[in-house]
Structures are given as structure tokens and as C-alpha cells.
Amino acid sequence: QVQLVESGGGLMQAGGSLRLSCAASGRTFSYLGMGWFRQTPGTEREFVATINWSGARTYIADSVKGRFTISREHTKNTVYLQMNSLKPEDTAVYYCAANSAGGAVDATSSYDYWGQGTQVTVSS
Image (tube, rainbow, N blue to C red; front, side):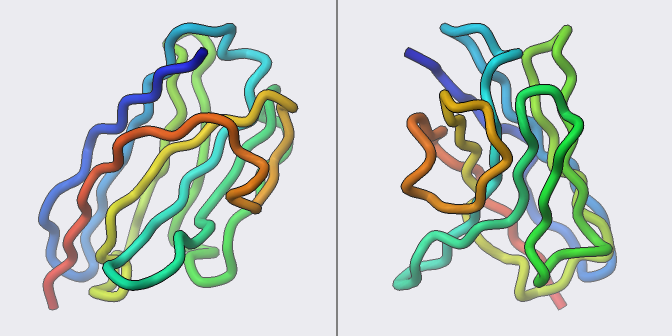
């Protein structure tokens, strides 16, 4: 079993930056593939970014490419989502997820564990 706890969300003006953190516990973090997704009311959960178990492979959604980066720190069992040049359309609840296969994958169905989510609101 894996527990994921997100933090770092909040209110930010357009053009600003936020860094989300996701702390994992309960299973060896080093073997997990990690991902970030986001969701707004009435919509499907949307892929944002993913990183494989070693950190050597990442994949970023086109909608945020060039503005968001994903990284992981094994000594802290934590994955990060650095969000720069924020836009109002980035407003959503952001979820951290883990997959036991260890891959960098963009499908929600590939993930075994999910956090509770953290709200990000970007004002214009």
C-alpha cells in the first residue's frame, strides 16, 4: 500500500509560479512511477506530467510543456511539479499518483494509488 500526500497548492496570479510536492510512504518509493494529473468540475481527470522510477524518463502534456517540469527526490520520497508562467486555465485540483510498474505513463488507468488532491487557483 502507498499513501500519497500533496502540498503546495494555493492562489496565484497569472504569470506566477508554484511548486507542488507529493510525499509518498508505505512502499519503496524508488520503484514507483509517479504522475501528476488535474481535474476541474465536470471534466475528466487530465494528464499533466509523469516520471519513471529512476527519474531518467519524463513526459509532459502538450498543454503545459515548456512551463511545467516534474522531478523526484529519492532521499525525501517526494515528487515535485514545478509550475511556471501560470495561466487561469491551469486552475484545477492537482492529484499525485503512483504506479507499481515504475513507468512514465499518461493513462489514469495505469496508476494504482492516488492522493487526495490540492487546489491550484490562478487569477487573471
